[in-house]
Image 1 (cartoon, rainbow, N blue to C red):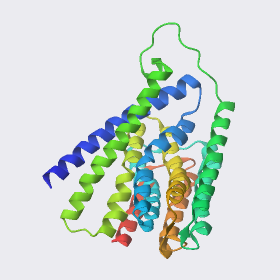
Image 2: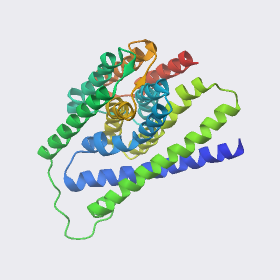
Image 3: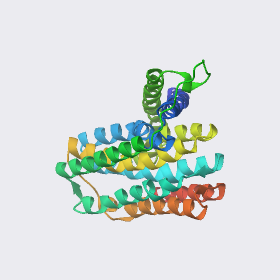
Image 4: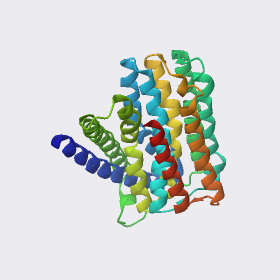
Length: 315
């Protein structure tokens, strides 16, 4: 138990430092290339913080634990918007661009609904996984092309200037890579510690998988969004939350099914867990619309309350 607590603490420290490096590097790259922070958040940052979900789900399907794999996707998506979104909104109200509300947020809701017909047969075949990956690739290409069209490359300053943006593109890319590695390793260490603690205090495997595992694999999103919020980079936070949910639904599920087809329980195939995930996405969208593109502290509290209710349901 003592070592588990030490691992948990060390993992959280590594997560925080990794997130700090990731945000610094990503923001600097966006500034140097003239690409908006929201695009960086939707792609590089979101893909990096979704790495733990991908690793956990792949390991689960290899072990023939389909419910664990898809449950991790569902639980992480809910945790991203309700738990992480709620906490970040309490720290600093989230400002959302009009373009993000018109384009990326509806995309997040649509790909979530896409899982209903895919999982309706209580199984996910390899060709369905490949189809999800194809949709993901198309969205990624579209996002990059749209970013290039709107890019306004920055002219380098004649003299030295302090800050991350003064570093070379390669140096900032190293910062991003180091941050992603720190997030992945930190999440793994913290998760191992948390699972050990949960087991020692008597939680069942089902409860640990549905709560600790989902929250644990969402730690990179949480820490990255908190760091970004504290630094005032709202577009990184919003892009990370929305992008991670799109990545989880399409990339993580698609890779898992491609590695090994798996079966799922009815609760995930149009059952209550599925509609909770969709409902949380709609609630997050409603918070943006009602707040006139600002997710305020009251909305943050309501999102956290919704997540607490979800945990009670699971238990």
